[in-house]
Image 1 (cartoon, helix red, strand yellow):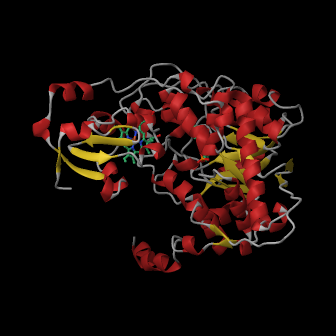
Image 2 (cartoon, helix red, strand yellow):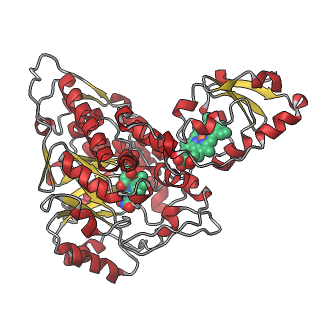
Image 3 (cartoon, helix red, strand yellow):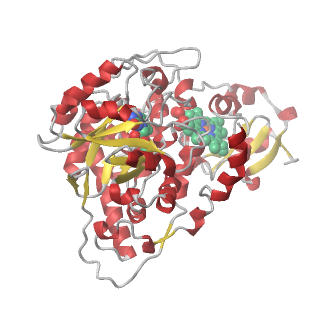
Length: 488
Ligand code: HEM
Ligand SMILES: Cc1cc2nc3c(=O)[nH]c(=O)nc-3n(C[C@H](O)[C@H](O)[C@H](O)COP(=O)(O)O)c2cc1C
């Protein structure tokens, strides 16, 4: 990229369809990338034909843009000698402005789950969007979760009479219309005033289950009341450093017949660094209903999850499952399994289920994509799929992803961010997102020649896993390091 590009030339490319931006002394064509920009296209369009370095550097690692764009999109060096006062003034524009809530697209225009996230990025408060869409450090695991589902291919069968279908499944004793649960996500009120009550009501209306979070913005009673009196829910537990507080929660849950399983989250011993969230230092007080924690701003930034999550006990260990069992008769599900070794341990400890999860890329960055872990379990401990319920979440955005997970042996899948964003449209939004998934699942089944989801659970004959197999941890790598480990 030796060529020098002048201010006059850049100014000719100042609209969404033809969008050049200067970042750190280099000129980039972001026209193709902008619609897929995870922070929303408007963040890019705002700088079309200008110098966006300040904003870019506020949110991104310096070399990200170089690594992300193709050579064809790198237009050359910025020619500093052509700078004018008008150019300097234009590039000084205020860098943070709240999106306009009136920009919210109508619900009927959202036709896939990504649309819900994009709509929220456009019309939700910046802080809320940073909290919900964000993930740890360089977003490696977040991005891998999504893209690795796309590396698993189907092997469809044809002429199977797909006129009638069964998408039903049983998850922890609950009959569901399709094997989907809405992930536990903290502070859903950040997305819309109905918060978790929209998730509860929407799940019930759609025949799926909502797993409510310990860090919900509403109390358990309010969330349960959003659904018919006997409708099932799951409860996600963060173990509190003050164990008596967790014991009190467990005691309370014992009296609530609607709660059918306890998902204990184990992948977040400490809340990770989510930079988009940290950078927006809001003083506005947001509180977590159940723990009473309030968000704050400190030296590290204003991360909502981090500043409200310090109560989580990092001393939690496998032995503590016996303590949980003493205080709860619910099905115990370990959420955050990231290896076959830990899946086997969960089985040995008598758990009723596991969730293969990395917190949607919000815990350890560089943790493996969840689809890879599911595949590792199939290879290294296939017995876990029969002896307990195996679930998976992370990057599941299509009905076809659900079918893939079930064919690998999963009994259910969790879907996170799109549902949180759907809360911006209240319970109708949640129902609409679920209906899209149901419709896509049915279409994928019909086109794959599958008529009964329960019957194909664990049936690898519908899948081509070859592309993914190269990414699985290899036994020889383990033996390569075995000697070293034994010396340490
Ligand atoms: C091709 C290079 C780029 C990549 C790969 C990229 C990637 C991302 C990602 C992954 C996020 C989401 C962070 C999160 O939700 O936690 C984000 C947010 C953001 N990006 Fe970029 N970006 C790029 C270029 C740019 C440029 C050129 C600008 C502006 C000049 C920009 C401005 C922003 C802003 C302001 C946000 C925060 C949005 C919010 O949280 O409300 N990005 N970007
Ligand atoms: C805004 C937000 C809040 C979350 N809060 C929690 C939580 O309180 N407890 C928990 O176990 N997981 C939490 N998670 C992780 C989700 O339960 C789930 O593992 C993840 O979102 C799945 O990935 P996906 O968003 O790509 O579907 C949260 C995720 C998001 C996006």
